[in-house]
Length: 187
Image 1 (cartoon, rainbow, N blue to C red):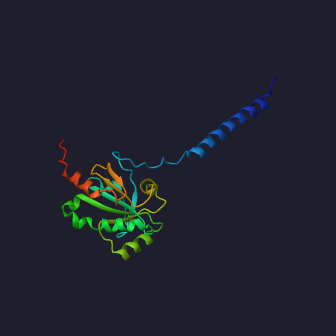
Image 2 (cartoon, rainbow, N blue to C red):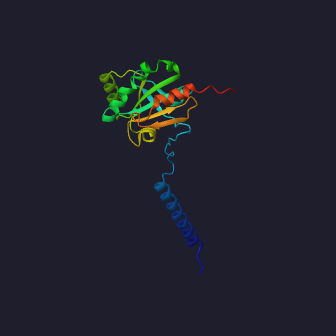
Image 3 (spheres, rainbow, N blue to C red):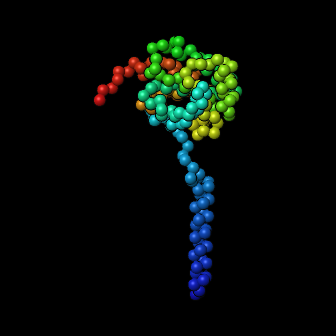
């Protein structure tokens, strides 16, 4: 069977369109064009994220804290179990004065609104550490708090995750003390 140039062109165009439909369908299903989800794994660099300081309103990043040990407690005002762990979080400065400026306490709210988090902190008079907000839409909220809150993490001075778990069941302070007790590595 002989095809005219016009018919050959139409057949080739249809094949191209079908190919594009297949590729577009694959991308739609697999999420092409979207950044891969953040993954939080012990012993690996912690995924960076931006947060808003609830006191100053300034934006910062987790990576800005590199060089310090960070205890991060992910919580929300509506989370019942978070209230007890955040109360305990407030005791760290008094219980561990030797931490000084080597350790940053980061209370990370995943409340829907910054205002809800700020009002709750003021009502509870939680002033230990830095009270920050990332909200629910931040990819970090899904990575760090996606399995449930409260969620506690210890990040070493090099930005590696060294401990993760429920802050009421994981002795985050002991992990920090062990990190501080390690002799500094010489070059």
